[in-house]
Image (cartoon, rainbow, N blue to C red; front, side, top):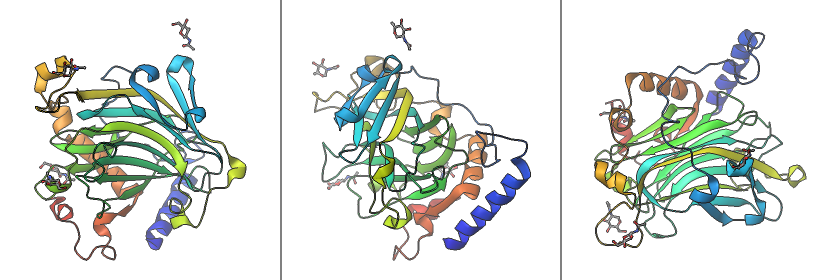
Length: 321
Ligand SMILES: *[C@@H]1O[C@H](CO)[C@@H](O)[C@H](O)[C@H]1NC(C)=O
Ligand SMILES: *[C@@H]1O[C@H](CO)[C@@H](O)[C@H](O)[C@H]1NC(C)=O
Ligand SMILES: *[C@@H]1O[C@H](CO)[C@@H](O)[C@H](O)[C@H]1NC(C)=O
Ligand SMILES: *[C@@H]1O[C@H](CO)[C@@H](O)[C@H](O)[C@H]1NC(C)=O
């Protein structure tokens, strides 16, 4: 991992030497991502109060712009977070996020789906975790997934970002359906998890709610815990806007047969409302974009961690096959 890191830094140095004189600001690393289909903007933008409620640390949650922008803060008393009012069974979930621009080692901003509250022993989870860094701009993006309580197997993959996530808002999206899970950043797929036979036991397959939180990850988030939070830089504030959640709104009162309480969805495709070619598989263009991210910016994959697993999880072998 160290040599990878070193190569990456060297690569960035080269790239920025070559391009920084001509490109400013948002393409800090001097690398423009490939063009891909926009999946964001296809669904209605939701207002905060209608679609979300406080999860914890309510005093650190602030609405701005008539509820179109929400900030959550971590200070030495508490972190904070909000969650969707309803659980969803499959769908497309997205927000634009701007990260704290101060020294942020040890800070974790998470944008994720979970049903831990309803299924503490067999929960599912799909995670974006943004991990702060002592160099302000060098946040790392961690993705992870748990299915049916598979917490003994962490399926983390970690990436550097090709932009400064503290400077502007960027879109972080989760597509989750019966075919696959796709993590997207600014519409670029960074990771795909197929609902394959090998993955079927650990594939999230129960309704989940969407969460956004900021909290103290001092003991692990930055350099494995070597860089804890420095509260002299608090409060750490993350901003969220452009919420989209489209999917099967789970009717919690109806326990027997699965159904969506948004009837238009039932009329369409039952439990898999986000359907059509754009959602059931990646296009060639999206695959090219995903390869671009993974080859240049991914610095950890559980699939390559032979030290950690005596047997690499079976879905890793299916890749590229
Ligand atoms: C907030 O909403 C009110 C009423 O709908 C509108 O007049 C006002 O311009 C809005 N403000 C912003 C910042 O969007
Ligand atoms: C999920 O786990 C439970 C036991 O906790 C098991 O009974 C069930 O069959 C599992 N479901 C799947 C899809 O593997
Ligand atoms: C949920 O299902 C129950 C029982 O069928 C029904 O009475 C209720 O209206 C449904 N709720 C929503 C929000 O659709
Ligand atoms: C997912 O499945 C599709 C279709 O079989 C395949 O092209 C793609 O490479 C698979 N993705 C991963 C990450 O295994």
